[in-house]
Amino acid sequence: MSLVLYEVRDRIGFITLNRSDKRNALSFELVASLKDAFEKAEKDAAVKVVILRANGESFCAGADLAYLQKLQHFSFEENVADSNHLKELFLKIYQLKKLVIAQVQGHALAGGCGLASVCDFVFAVPEARFGYTEVKIGFIPAIVLVFLIRKIGEQRAKHLLLSGELVLADEAMRLGMINFVVSEEELEKSTEEFAKKLIKNNSSYSMELTKRMIDEVQAMNLNEALTYATKMNAQMRASDDCKKGISAFLNKDTIQW
Image 1 (spheres, one colour):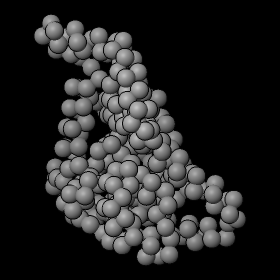
Image 2: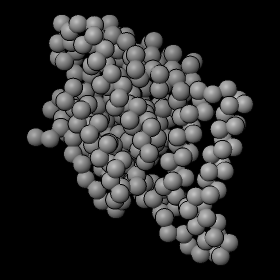
Image 3: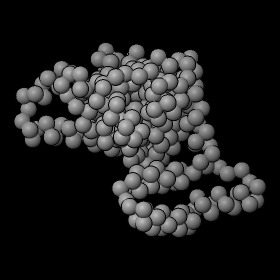
Image 4: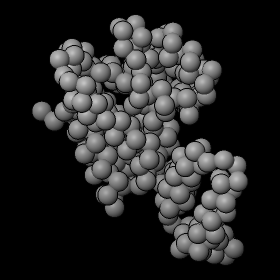
C-alpha cells in the first residue's frame, strides 16, 4: 500500500496521506514519500496548485511515537540526520514554487499541525483540533516552531507551543493558523473551488515570485528588503506574464492563465 497517493485533475495536484491505520503519523518512510510527491508536483507541468489532504479520520497525528521510541537508541549524529529529514519536508512545502492548500478533515497535531502550518492556505472542518502537544510527552516542537512564529507571531506561538493546548478550527482561524472553516460536507468542494479560482485568475509566475518574496524579505532589514523588492518589481515588469496581463487588461480581453 502506498503511504502517499498522487493524482492530477483540472491542473490541481492532489497529494494524499494514506496511512489512516496509524492516523497518518509521520514515519521516516511517510516523510520520504511526501518529499517525493511534492518534488513531483513542483516539476509537473500539468499542476498549477497543490492540495494536501488525508485519508481517514485524522489529518495527521504528528510523529509516529513508536518511531520516536526507536530514535532514542540512535546516536546524536543519527538523530540530527533524521531531524533534517523532516526539516527538508517542511521547507520543501514552505518554499514550493506552486501554492499548497491543506484540506484538513480531522485533527492535526504536533508535527501534523506543523504540516498544515507550512502550507499557503488551510481549509478545515469545525471539529478539527490543532495544537503542538510535544511538551506533554517530554519532547519539543523544534522544527515547527520556526515556521509557526513566522506565521502567527511570537506571543501566540509561545502560548500554543508552551501550553500544549489544542484549539478547535474556529480558534485556529482567529489565531491565524488556518484560513477557512467549512463543514465536512463542503470541505472538498470548497477547497477545490478555491484552487480552481487561483488557477483561473492568477499568473503562476506572479504567485511563485510573491511567495518567494514573502519568505525572503523576513530575513532582511528594511533597506535590504526594499532594494530586493525594487529589483523583483523590475524583473516582473519584463516577464511574459506581466506583458500578457497588462495587454489583456488594456484591450479588455479575458486572460487565459
